[in-house]
Image (cartoon, rainbow, N blue to C red; front, side):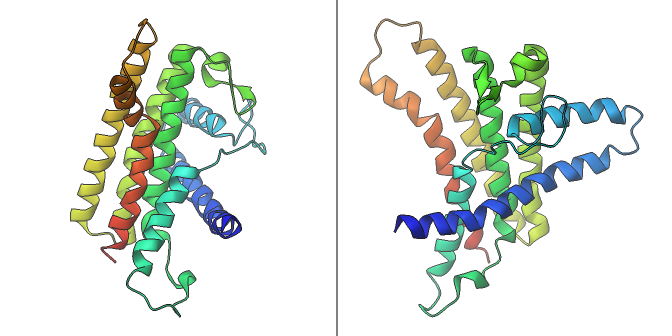
Length: 230
């Protein structure tokens, strides 16, 4: 069973990475005619550094992209929901992942936005065996890089419209996405507050963690919502 899941997840990995790169390519292309093109490109390079794609000089490198667990779960829910209406003999590879890929990339970008700001708040100097963004470029710039990742995530989510997802579904996805990110911010606020308390009740702790990692994991269910419109 584990081998089967790993095989499926490996198939998703390249698709997700390509979609993430496409998100940056779209923005880089739009900057081509800007007066401050070279300077503006730097913040996109710093975002890519956080993702593990480039080094501190913003040169391409074979860094670790992370587990990509959240976007993989989103694509899995997309395929499983589609499979519910198929016969056992249906080839699962017959389903295109394209409609769900923008949402998968958006979830991964949002996850990385939270990691970057978390590094600042916790004072962590290392992430994925490399110096963190704030420890390389300073806290003010790192905050901007995190904000840019957040904005890019929300912007790329709307690409589902280009893949044939119905507008009403896209609006629903955007609402779910923004609600999740707001709850995640609430969870981080509670986490930081509890760090200064001598005692925290179990119910308070459970409410806090339900608004952190769990909330972005829950975003994986939007894959099934996208599949339901196909």
